Length: 440
Image 1 (cartoon, rainbow, N blue to C red):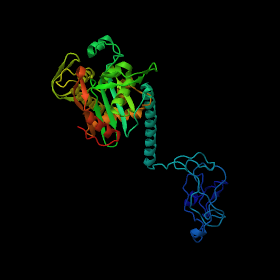
Image 2: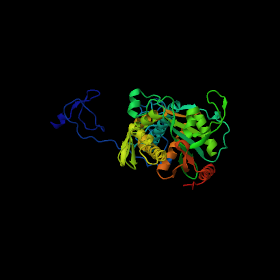
Image 3: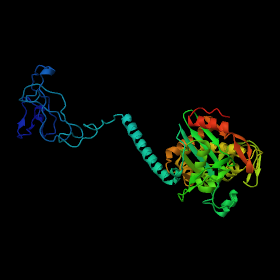
């Protein structure tokens, strides 16, 4: 019976077998399981040293991008062939390669390996370069925007008989009572009055040098000589006007004659001129968010609108203008006012030139716009000169410099002030030579 169970048709020819002499196991179509068969013994060849193994050859053409195992001619394990088996991989890549097997990708040449850590150094470098480009573009755009707002209306080339240039840079900073841009309501609010034209409310000589910066207030009532001059508009030459108050020069022929008068009475060469009116001054203070100031005494003046108690407080634009214009609330009058003007301008520069303002475009642009729209300078004054001027004023506030009045000897005619000639001469020589100022 067992003999009969081993008889089933051959899968190739359909003949029955039952002798068990077939040396190979064959599949069949019968339901009975195949019995154990004797397998042919294959003699294994001796192992070949790696140095003697043949180099694998790739099949020509596209291999699907998988780097299939290739056999060299005569690889062992293949019936009818002899030789050594090479277990190395071909040069194929998972996602193709530059050799025509598809585009390179992750894991292939030129692409990151799957799971590889990101190249943070490269990413940081790209990020830093992008930030630098943005900052450069923004800085250049801001420079041209600001430069276009500066009002270069004063021509110092019209000033005649000028003294020679000294060491360092000298700025003449003027606060005028110009009411340009103010409505009638604003004039009333700011207590400016409605006088036509403009006069000087403050004049400051700022010296910027290697041995410290010096800020010297020139009292508007200083009794000086108004020299001969060439008219800034007519071009005609006018003789000396004789003795008068310093602010009269500005009223007669504006900034050019004021510079001419300061140079003629001091012997100092004025390199740059800067002037700001009432409206611009108040707008800058409001744009920066007010200026904190320690007021030395109680002040009340109906003409300027000043009404302050002694102590530290933050002034808005209207209050700041009243503070710097007040002179009737002091026993010393104009001299005390010039000190307060210096104190306030230095505080304004100090609070404006801070990272919270410079690095914040929402604050920087309003401040610059408010100042540059009403700031009048000479034709040769650039933004870097303006920056140097403000940084010098900021430095004086921080104690890096000297703040003083022009030395005065006493009262002169018409309620004027006479300069102390020996001290003025000493001060001028120290500034001209950029020496440390020793005059008190």
